[in-house]
Length: 382
Ligand SMILES: *Cc1c(COP(=O)(O)O)cnc(C)c1O
Image (tube, rainbow, N blue to C red; front, side, top):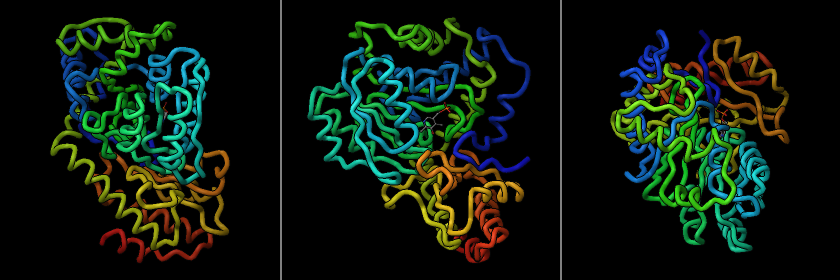
């Protein structure tokens, strides 16, 4: 099997793989009730959320979780601010527009984030009820300052919603301490499962916002459809609204246990350390990162400019060496960069990270770019 080093789906741990395999269970089976119920409690811990926050596990993906956030908090005609950092900011803004929300997008250059002053100004004009931001934008490798944005929103009386699909479980996020209202992700990114689940934790203020809506969200995305189900499973009672992927629920419990084993501090530090080693390798290969500054550079993936004379065929050349990486995603730059994911269970296998740096270096060499692979590997080791 090739090594899967894209920004999702990612390599999963042997224990998660084992938990997800086998015959599917009924959603009413005792092992599924336990896995579902226990996972909800562990999500609060992994999200560093308060006891009153409501976790949701949904059949679907990150996009499903985004649409739930876009439709349960605001009525048509309400105003919202979207912090633009790349491809997924555009998706969030479009979901909100389709809900009839008046959206102000605060722009930035690709590879940068809007200034807090610009976001503050957008929040100060009109009466936006919510601020949406992508914690790590998968198209640019840029990470926003979620703590500062959450505080800014709270100061202005707006909800803050963070798309953590490429971040949750890899990048520091303290939902309760930072006062963030919604933090959402998908199963196939840093959480480390196959694709198929949307995962959200929703704070009390956001749950209140749903109660005040005049226009109900789509039934399958409505907090109100799912809250009774989540409460029932957390009390270890089966319940039904729409069938969950039961094999993934078995894996979810194991993935969350592995994530929390050692604590979230250790988990964040592990991602930071791995990212530093990968970046040392990239630097030695003469590659430069799309994010413009270190403090906005994500730890979960690297978005790297293709060097002069090397085209998007690099990804296929790396693939020949047994490592799957991703091409560009941001339309404006799509053919000028490539992306490597480094999140989740694979970080427990430094040899896999090392092999990735080696494969990128050799592929660059095969395409005529002078790359010192030995120097890159030794930079990775230090
Ligand atoms: C992957 C991703 C999504 C979309 O998730 P899907 O599971 O593909 O629907 C949304 N936002 C971000 C930041 C992502 O990385």
